[in-house]
Length: 107
Image 1 (tube, rainbow, N blue to C red):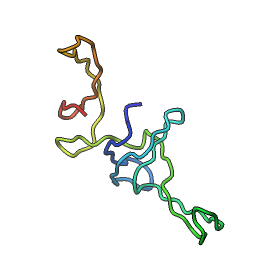
Image 2: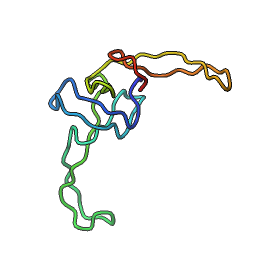
Image 3: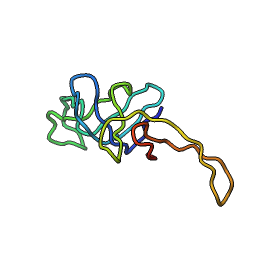
Image 4: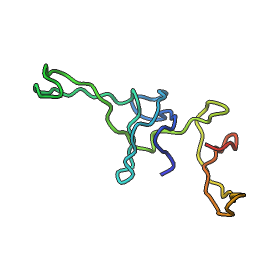
């Protein structure tokens, strides 16, 4: 999966099309992500120790990763993600870096 925690993404499909937010959690086994302020669901809860009052709690629900795209840091537009192999000068080891297809900048 090319999307990671703390990435800034934009929703490209569904009810929240055009909304942007930060990725809070990634579920790699289900190909889903939770984005801050997107796909809000209401849950009715009984009083408990965490919430002694009870009531209606709003929280983000996961959406499929195919419905979001990463925002390019340089142009602030949605972009596809590619990868590039970079050789570390100090250790000589190869590392894989994510790059933006729009600007070519590292993410």
